[in-house]
Length: 478
View 1 (cartoon, rainbow, N blue to C red):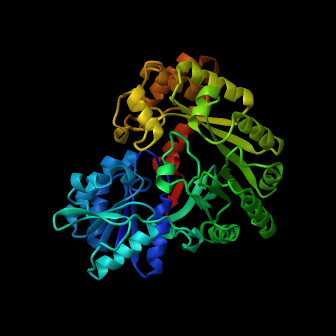
View 2: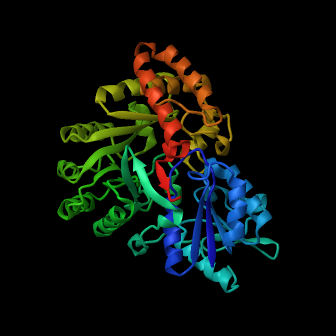
View 3: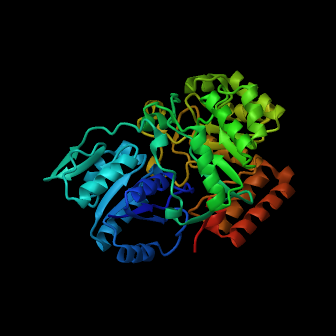
């Protein structure tokens, strides 16, 4: 079977790791795979490229990944695929957990909705379509049969993710991953999350189940990355690298033993660290760690139900500073009980603690999370979450205690002071520049020379490196 995967254009850039794993399992079974990356690669002439690919490749199956911020673009592409080519259309991705059978009701061109991890599902669907078998025995799907919608048995999570083949990035046409001037490589060391943060959708996707790859399999993949992609640096893209401290230490020990000489970055939980682990992380090449903080106001932080304490975060910062590992922190504006004063207090505390970089974004409540239920009860939803231009700066709801204008002001003040300038993709670079200049003059005029230097460098990168590469850091094969 010929399978074409399409990544629709969205506001959040970055390679689709899911397609790399799906391509690997399909190619192992001798299916032919091609990927159209409209999110990172093909920014213009998308309809022409789609028609040409369908005509030349002639796929039997076209698979889409659907996220909240790519929902409408995905639906339009599905219609175009069926207009130009006769094939089966499958839709997977995080948004299917929310939409479920509604997708089939809203779009007659969708044949199958796949819910859950896709590696086993796509193989079973390919076999079923190839041999014209009924779909009733394929777990984790919703489809039409004789005019009615059928839902099959739930697809269980893959217990042993070490059984999966290594991701196939060559199927995505990737030559290099670039990050901060180096050839980088994204690596997934685990799936899922056992925690219960009130804003997070991960618990919906993984049912609070965490499954890890062995350190040995990670080393095997990194050796291959060095050979195929000239990897100089790798980024651990899952949220819970340090959840199993013994596993993390073993991985660091193997990095040192194998002498791969790679720098790396990761996400870590503040309560899942020891000095021994941090020391080994440093010795094995770790140069930066990212920590989800969300808020440093105790009343707001405690309501999140993260399973860790503010004291854990402060201790983690001290440890990383001791071993000279940079710390990037993530914060959310607009959590339950939040106010303008609360956000500004949290920002002030973050500077006192001494993170090397702070990233802030407005809360985007997603259905099936506790925060979404809280917003419906206590707030006013201002915008369809599927139609937000960016989850970073656009305000999707407000409360009497924290208005839309106050949320925008809080975000803009912090973004300017952190030199993380908001960029609205609906506006031109010139328009964005004027907006940013106005905000600088309003909130941080004293540092105007430093802002001018940073903005000039950013404009240079976009102009001379190309918009796609500047945003995604991905270099594709010609």
